[in-house]
Length: 281
Image 1 (cartoon, rainbow, N blue to C red):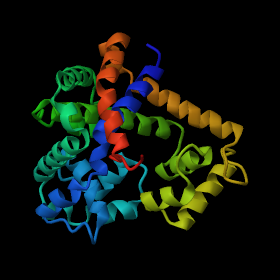
Image 2: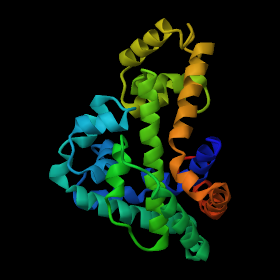
Image 3: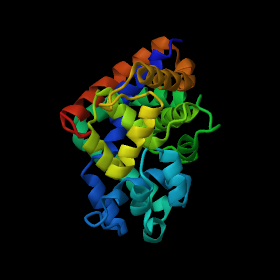
């Protein structure tokens, strides 16, 4: 199977899970557990995503999430497990997913296509393995939720984390830190610009500038912090390796059923994006 199949599946399925990071329902559900998101917005992200791993430390979260500054993770994880247990957060996250998907997708959730998509995505996720895939492994130990749209959400989440774990491995092989990966992403100029990504990930200006200088010394970015030819080669190698490492679940389905899954999920993803469910329109 061509590795590009894994990228195509990821792009189509991504909104179904990723909307949980942008949903306004987050504030209500996590506040009900005792998190003060007005004072600590990072608490809406780090503890909930990490909850499947158990009551892990901020250091573990920083390692497996990879792209965030330690200070951002420390802030997000501050007293996290004193406020609520990982199990409570897992259940709150499911409630967020349920409410947000119903709001964003409406009647689309009631059709037989959702159950069919959930079955295919769950079958695909069964081919994932936990070796070196911490975030996937944590999620894979959780019970499967009901009904079908939550099964689909959970399965897409497993596939997403499996791919993400592989992406981190690809970056590590190239000797790239999470900060350096962010600098290269900005240098490519495809989506993020410097300040929004720097602030979102919690890096200081000094840390960012030091990473740029280091990548310049390695010949990966030029004097204007844009990708050099060598930098483009390295970044493409990371992306290609990520696609390849993400292939096992899609090989399980085969190309025909991968196409079928994408066709089943596409109306949901389009509805989510159109409604601003992942922060864009």
